[in-house]
Amino acid sequence: MEKGDKASPSAPKSRSERRREDTRRRLMKATYEMIARRGLEGLIIQDITEAADVGYGSFYNHFSSKEAIVDAVIDAALARSHAHYERIHAESADRVEAFAMELRSCLEESRSDPVWGWFAIRTMLSGPHIRLAIAERLKRSIEGGIKAGVFAVEDAEMARHTVGGLLLLGTLKIVNNETDAAYPEKLVHTALRALGVPAAKIHNALARPLPELGSAPFLEAA
Amino acid sequence: MEKGDKASPSAPKSRSERRREDTRRRLMKATYEMIARRGLEGLIIQDITEAADVGYGSFYNHFSSKEAIVDAVIDAALARSHAHYERIHAESADRVEAFAMELRSCLEESRSDPVWGWFAIRTMLSGPHIRLAIAERLKRSIEGGIKAGVFAVEDAEMARHTVGGLLLLGTLKIVNNETDAAYPEKLVHTALRALGVPAAKIHNALARPLPELGSAPFLEAA
Image (cartoon, rainbow over all chains, first blue to last red; front, side):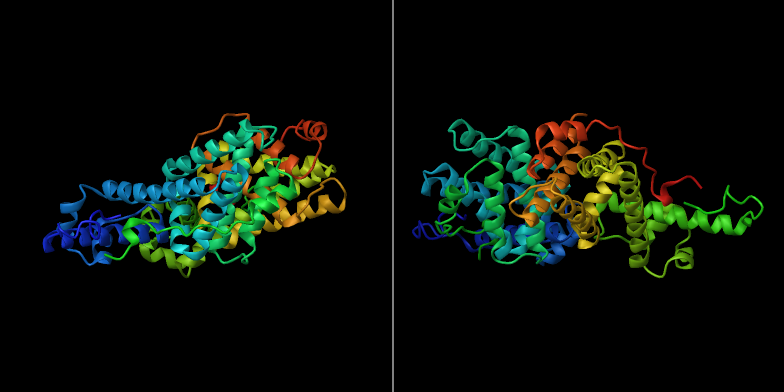
């Protein structure tokens, strides 16, 4: 999020500062959309600057390399996803409910915004960075639930892979328009059953509406 | 497999026929490797002919378009995979054992040949063709097992997605070298548990060694 725009009107940004931020944001947005469409492989700076309508040379005023802009975009996406996680856990003290919301929000985000879904899938495929960050969070939630006695599994690692695999395949089906509106809840039900949660408890855990979740900073209007 | 090379030495191919087949095979192999590396997006005929060391114009003696060579490569991959399936089911009359072998062979193929694993992952991501063909086969095996009473699940569709998700995520971990040699059996154990198979039965189903499985026609030496 851009700091200060509204919070400190006494120190407005100069026109050149705003322009600079706008250029940076357009470059990141173009990179994000290009990754969603084609993956990280074959990403070319010139394609990014053309899509962003920015001069090729200006790119280097903002990023030192293709890798630098990819890292910035992935970091922004992870920060967005982490903010959702914090928000959900702040709103629900029930571990099963909070975990159900985590999974549902992942799936609903891809459903309401397929570009985001494709971005998540392609980055998970192209490199371990995003996939391992998601795996780390799944691990924290699932192991926390096992310790607290709300999840009961034979093999904690394979339970994580079961849930992660459902998320990955489910997202792929969602962005390909192969599912209906009931699918995210069905998938979460299946994931929670795989974690040994009784059906009645799952029913309650799915009852609360999802909080509104904001978009990635580089997707906001300037 | 090339017909006749050894089976009917009385009708040898002419030199020009052999050359033509060799060129076609090199084009398909280059396409296959390029898809494994970068996916279907951004595939360019000139890159294929350069990698295959074939003149650009010659491409059109063999394939009418980029789409035509991609279809030919995917069809060859599916034919290979289908042949494995038939072979496994011919060798084992036990449904659980045969299904365990199907899953293990998928994973072991990616393990012993990461190019194959990447090819499978990238084609699954880039279009529904291969993914739906695999889903169709999983469906046949799982529904057959449910009818025969060896699988017991709450929701047949979600059971398929659980197994499919494990296969997809497992393959991704295997080609990224994140797993050890015991992983395929562990994954298959988890998949069979998700299908309601008792642990003792799974132990037996995993005991038989996998049959030797041949490579795709375009990967064979000329």
